[in-house]
Length: 455
Image (cartoon, rainbow, N blue to C red; front, side):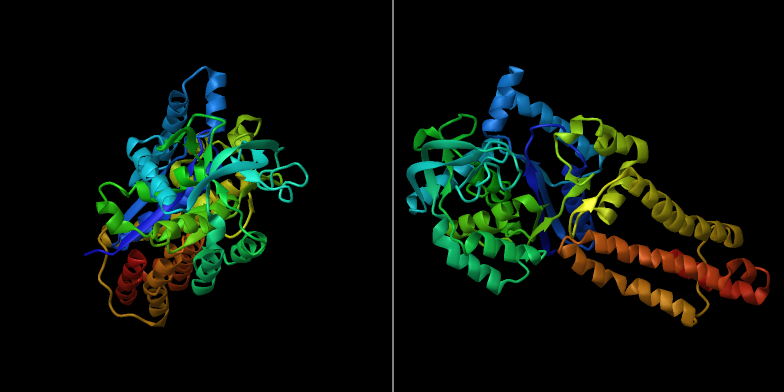
């Protein structure tokens, strides 16, 4: 049986126009999925949309539409973007899917019956865009610590998840599994900024809006984002219903996301899984942000004068999906925040794709066509120069597999293009155009062009 590999993106919030930042994580995950499929793995690649909450309800009201109809149009637009970007996902989950709703109701009820969810009252600072509550110390300047927008004072009855109960188990998780959260710089941030100062129990229901999954045993409450959205990674596999896919693919091999939601995936999500007695994902990776003029790309920017620069639909039409995908993987914010300009995009297309890869392909195929009627010749024995290139090519795969398992596709691209550049140098070193002029040289030429074709 094939080994399985389960890779996910976060589920995206359909509250505005999509931009390159939205596309980055999905292209990254799709590239991982494609590499692992080529490596013989049985891959499940999940993406989707998180469609409930106050922000969606308000936006729909402003448009005079029911919330579901409002998000349907935005979700269709996202699916069309993924189609144009050649995203080959296994499943697209929506939190409005009936199967997801039924599973979330079961999860919430199970946690309540175990005593990990209880009813109380919450008062704190609330950020509508992030759908997050903050304490006085966290929102000391009156702004959300995550997005910087103004927060408002909110007080309401709520059900709470006993997050504080899992502090010690979370610390042990990080201690026992140093590669659980990557890059490792994020580990200290989670431990020192959130866990060690003391985790507060988490409000997991709301009464101030109605657009959400009702709490099964208390209909005036709707289930909040933490349990609704985060549970998608298991509900998409049939958890709580037909668990064939769940039994096959869970735990996830890697959750990929931008760094601003790492806290939810590396603290809240593991704690929920611990409470449910479910195995934890193997890896969580929080990449950086695509930056424009010192600011993070956001949905608000996608509607302004920068639209043509960061609108992926425009860029696909102008440069092609493969070129855009390559540049996002090569120069995207995998390890840290990365500035983006169209000059970077054009430079990579011209230098890497046209000059390096395109030149290698055109030179190699042209010489095989010219000298051997388009048929790849058989090698006539290898010398040291050949062996160097062969060894470089043959040793590449295991390195790439290790990178791909961690979601590190930028390193995959770097290694692949190092081989491409070495092969171009090999052409200059072996001078096939000179070898073609003599009978002895043509024997050597067969080996050179065979090695190039294989590379």
